[in-house]
Length: 492
Image 1 (cartoon, rainbow, N blue to C red):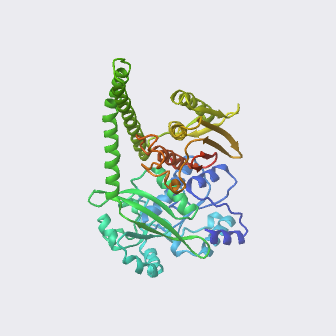
Image 2: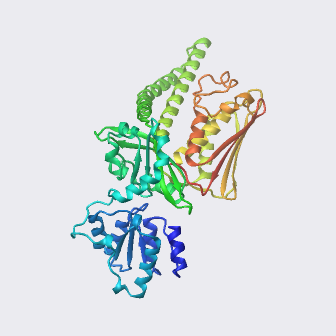
Image 3: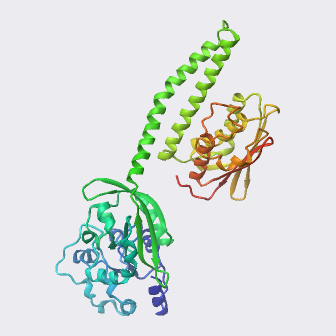
């Protein structure tokens, strides 16, 4: 489009370029445009949808369709939707387009319908995507010939498409992974074959990255084979640009991850079922132990035994809770809401002081409000895990103290949690956010820890796009920092 923009600008036209169909509609509705050149395959909204909305709103702005679609029913459809003409992109020079537009502004009535727009009948298509014209496919195949040789040797599914996702090349692995033959897929769109099963938002984000930002995209997709079986693939798409910086091709490499996804699903379901099955019995045992502990007719040894059983039960309850939180996180079951981060930390502090009465816990935030749009329950869990960790591992030789602060620095919030505990050994600090890891000096102080608290905190921070870090020295304590950018988009 840059080359066409340059040609039209040189001819004296002022040009506005839209990155997707929705932006094109907004620009047209805003007014100030005299002519539209429209492709049919666009991110977010197709050219058909744009034409349909313009027709519905009785907008009579002249629209010239410039696309590689060439089936008669598609040409008839765009003309029926109000386009003034249709040009086949692969066989039309930029000069021809400029001449047509220039002639239109001289006298629209003298414009002759372009040959690509002449059809045998007035039938219209009932679908949006169509196969690529044979002539255009042949031209593309000659261009991609040098790219094919290396991909033929790969065991992973590989396709090369034109800018509108028409398949120009597929290696033999595609047949194995999808059940479609190479001959069946050439010229067609993956969404009409094995794809198109993910939520609309997934594809909007994908097209934004590869077509608008012109960057590589990575994601996981659920596809359906020709025989109806489901399979999962890790999608890697990279745009190939021409000398003008315009997209010429997309290369997609899709390793099969079906077995991995099955194992992940089994793990999630197992953890969830196990957690819920254990949670109630463990709570009942805790209540029974608390009741037994209130009885006075026990020897010192018996009372110590009850105390140890209670501590182990409490540790199991904590482990089950952590596993359920982890399962929920990995499923992505959470919703954002607006709340005051300062009030949330104050609420956590109330519980913290009751749980650890021997530790001096102090919170400094002032009177300022700290509005935040995030997953409130997960945000609370993140800070509960960090603060509990600080209180749990206070050096028994010292008067325990935990200082928590919340400040705003520019466009980000900073939460710090400083303790005077036992610290984390230098050699073990790189492992502190790993699943089930516990520092060597933590186990003697608390034998029943799950090793999931900081892992979960890091997981929640990463999903929100926040940063979590720490400094620590053995015997001197640890300080955790959570930085929350206010403008950064989260993955959740």
